[in-house]
Amino acid sequence: MDEFRDALTQARKQSPYPHRTDFARRAQMTRRTYERYEAGSVIPAEEYLERIIRHCAIPPETAERLWRLRTEALAKRAGVPVGAPLPDLDVSELAERIQKEVEYELKRAGVKLMPSTKRVCARRIAMILSTALRKT
Image (cartoon, rainbow, N blue to C red; front, top):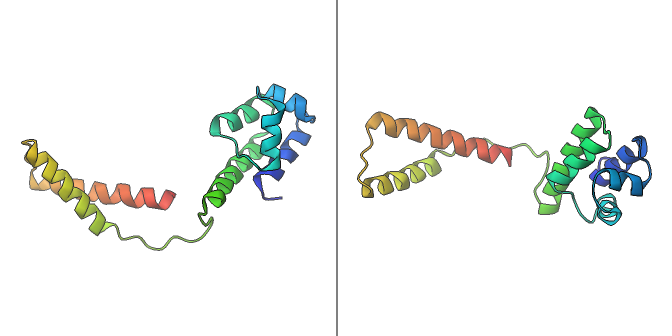
């Protein structure tokens, strides 16, 4: 029951609108669109899942579960392993390369960076890269 489509079906059946037609109408979408979500052939865009949650009286705990399962379904469909531990990431070399490129472009534009600004930029670039890679 951990799949998104099963959780969505269960949420519908526990809502005040247990019939697909009523549920879809309440969520401001066609019945066919909603049926495709339940069948698992389509994963709803954020906007549509938000409509379902907001308009169909989905409890907060169920809504959180739907969001999490939707993310997992999208990852699975994209071939991204879900729940695998991330290795320690060393982005310093990549951050240094990016910084050199930025410095080069700034130099071409006539902007000179102070050494302290270069150090701050290097740390921030590394932090942004590390954060972004951990979120994927």
